[in-house]
Structures are given as structure tokens and as C-alpha cells.
Length: 344
Image 1 (cartoon, one colour):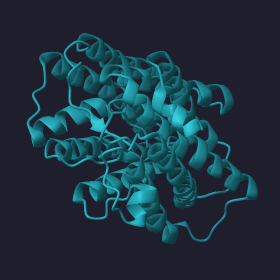
Image 2 (tube, one colour):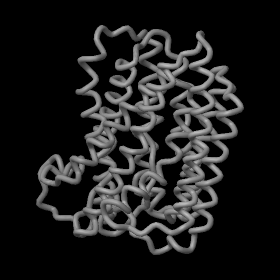
Image 3 (cartoon, rainbow, N blue to C red):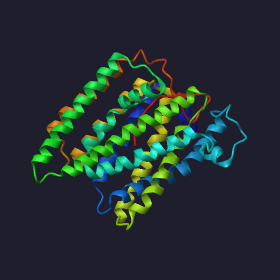
Image 4 (cartoon, rainbow, N blue to C red):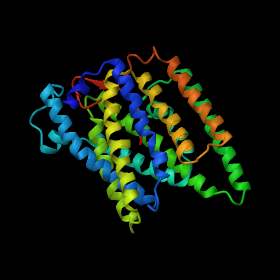
């Protein structure tokens, strides 16, 4: 069974699968540009709803395969239906906080794409590991090496340059959409901040002996996002083609790759996951450039390159330092661990 095979990935297989995951993540921008009439909150609602339905069907099959293969050995058998089939930890505060964080990330990401360019959104999201480092330092006392502080300052400078240049052009050009840039930037910022809070909460819960399964929390996040955006989505304007594109995003861009990323992280070290995840930024900008005629400006290319370079050098410099870092547990909670990755 495919689900069982995913529990026995070699390192090389996990690397190639993680590259495939970033390819799936990266289609959000270019697909959103194919929509004909779906409005902002309607776009978010349909994508989250299709993600929820997809995971609602996938998770019971996955967990059944894990139980059959012994991957969930050590997990209590006296579980309610929600926990047994979908991994819902109804009594865990950290689990629900994680679900809320996912809902913020899902909603903010799609809203950001309706306000500003794909490149702007992806570059801001790429700084997620640095936001995570800062929040973990503040709230759970994790010490940051000098290289990470240097990366934070450098990436911050790249983002300031990128957005500062665009803001200046927007406010000096009457034809430019300055408000869209501001709103899109703020919405984009919610994604890495929400992700940083998510990983910090889950990591802290593990330090206190509580295992949080990230894939079921994605399911909860999709449900919350759907419920909250439904009233704002009326009246529905999406065409049949729009619905098909948004179904593709829900299943192929979010549900499947989120689950596969968690599996990949069982076989990969934290720096490897972080480095491979950067491919999403490159792929996403290229797809929007080639198939949506969304050419990134020179300030985006230069500022974005500074951000990516800062992240890349930080991960490479800390490769050995992070070999023993605490990782976040996943579906096979008692037997495997995963590192931090991020996508909306």
C-alpha cells in the first residue's frame, strides 16, 4: 500500500519527494492567476474547504495503514473515533492553537495573492525560519547563534529594500496600486508569523511530553478557515473553471504536499528540509513569470536574492550545529520525529 511505503523512505527518496512537495506548493500563485471571477474570500473559502475534504478522506486511510504496519505502535488503542481515524486531540490546547495558526496561514496566504504579486508573497514567506528562531528565543528560551542574528539582519535588509523600493514607486506613481501593496504585504507577513507561532507552540508541547501530530492540525486549520471565510465569500461568483482550479489547490497544492512534507521530514535533517523548502520560492516565481506574465521587478529580484542568500548561508553554516536539534513529531508519533517546515 502506498501509505505503508511512505514509512520506509530512504534518504535519497525523501530528498526527491521533498522536491516534488515544493513543486506542488509552488503552483498556488500561477493557479490563482487563472481564476476568472472568484473574489478574495471566496478563493480562500473554496481552497480551504477542498483541503478539509481531501484530508478528511486521506487521513483515515493513512492512519489505518500506519496501524497495520505498526508505525503507531505505542499510541493508546483506547481512542475516540476522532483521534483514531483523524488524529484529533480534542483535549490538547496546543493542538487547537496549531490548528488556529494553520487557519491564519491558509487565509492570509490566499488573500495576499489577491493583493500583490506572487514574488512579493513568496519572498516574505521565505523568511519564516528566521521568524521562528526569534519567537522561539523569546518564548521558550532557545539561544540563537551569531550566524542566525546575522541572517535575520541581512534578510530584513533585503525585505526592506524590496518593499521600500516598491512603496516609493507606488506612492510617487498615481497609477500604482499602493493600497494593494500595503495590504498584500501585511497579509503575507501573517503567514511566517503564524507558522513561527505554530512551530514554537508544538515544540514547547513536546518539551513537556505532549506529542502533536501536525497533519490533523492542518485538517483543523482548513476547517476553521472555511467556516470563518464562508460568510465573507457571499455572493459566490466563481465559475466552474474557478472551482476546478481551487479544488486542484486544495488537494494538490495543500492537502497532499503538507502530508508528504511531514513524512519527508522523518528521513531528513532540519537543515535539509529548510534548504529544500526554499525551492518553493524559486519555482513559484518562475511559474508566475512564465505562465501568468507576472515579471518580477529588479528590486524584487535583488531584495529576494539577498533574503534567499541569507537563509541559505545560515542553514549551511549551521548544518553540524543542528544535527541534534529537537524535532517535531508526526503521524508515527512514538517512533519518528520531524523538523520544522512551512507552507500555507
